[in-house]
Image (cartoon, rainbow, N blue to C red; front, side, top):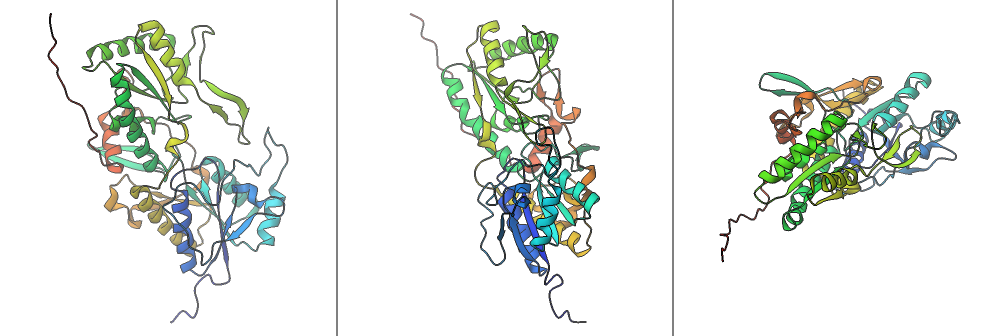
Length: 410
């Protein structure tokens, strides 16, 4: 029987993005918008995350509008607003959310975010019956997507989130570039990389010729710090150009000689509405200890927001489109409270809907770096991690200056 009109004609779907930005959010918005429009939805954009559903609302119409998905970040902007009561903001703002959803006649809500944003959406679905679909987003790649990595007969639970592939490429390029200044001064560069609780992104620096690495999953106790410094000295003395690049996650737990405690380094004591403090500065602490205890010149370099910034890369672009295809399936079946994910880690050509599935938004949580990906005794990422990363990033050959000048003896 011929369908006389589009399935969801007369219905409205709204999209919001919350939490930290990534290079792939605009691509996610565009992909979801285009597919929802094909189904007949009017598509709205909610600006500044959950904040855009407070007060009188901050809503824009994305229907029949051009949208540049290659441009990084989010044109809908973002915030770390929590609609539910928190220590920082005890007010329950759920009634405002419900009022605006009704006021703007929003039938379905798609939330692009991590555990916090999608966790709030899932709670609204469970307590208020709001039809929601979550969409994954993080450069840290620690959102539990239950994506399997098959390596040498092993089944490893990995993670694959939009935003990570573009950020990974940015970190590899940053690492490859910083190498020239490290070589020029025979220095050790301690490269600080975003990663509050997980070292997924830190590991991508190895494709830019990083030597060692520290990740939050394995704290650096007094004994391990001594062993780490000893390993650094040996690696530096063995290096032909007398230089090392050591990426470290911002959330690394480091032993402090004065306090006698193992803890993170805080950039600020202030916390957001989800209770997260701001980390930053661990690279300076480690570089200082290398210089003072080993007598080797070391410098800290914070990559900061560089990993989040810039254009959406090709893998991310294809990934967001593939997951948006799965959103269509969820919409058609009205299967709400779900988040589309990849079933397995695949190379670029295999990013297709048949390799996707969906998981309950209440079961997302966080996924740290599996032990099989990191050699805790050598402070290095393993071949298993390299295989995981090679599915996502094509390993590039960066420029190197090969020389072996003969020494002049007077």
